[in-house]
Length: 241
Image (cartoon, rainbow, N blue to C red; front, side, top):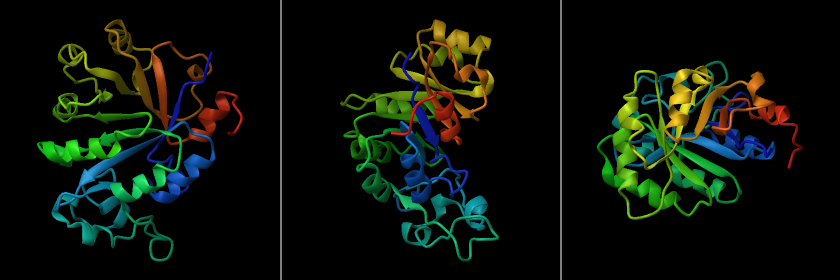
């Protein structure tokens, strides 16, 4: 059986700041199949590679990205408080991320965050900038964002990120989804079986690399999204490329 693709979640950021260039570079060196990264929009409509709607956790400032212009965001110093003064990372723009990524041969999972809600033109702009990547799919917790992508006049792959409270009958009626993304706590549950019975493959996130099912996974699984890509790769007994 071929290895299931391993995606480095936010770059597999256990050593470096999440969604940073260093984290993505480190992931590429250990043989991951793909990168999972998050996108938020600045006040002036620039897409940045960052997860939270604000920068309190990563930069120690209580400001929302949607209230900040790109110029201000690019000056932020990211990292743990104790080391941020000297050893810090910068927020990556989508453009800078793509400069790095286009030099690799990895798969890409672009997760659209909440700042893109209602921003049809900006969603489309991101897709057009990334559509040339050999294997790219777009994910979100927000159905409306994915529906914008599905209506575009180009071939795309979208994945809904589900929760227990999601409207599953409605979601599974959307045959345009390529896959469903689930927290690993739903692996082996009735929800997983319901999704598979409806014909949708799944990628699971929050994988730690110690799960027993990594050795002999369910046929529904088409990807592992993990902060510990090295451990997952080792479980698959493959050699570093």
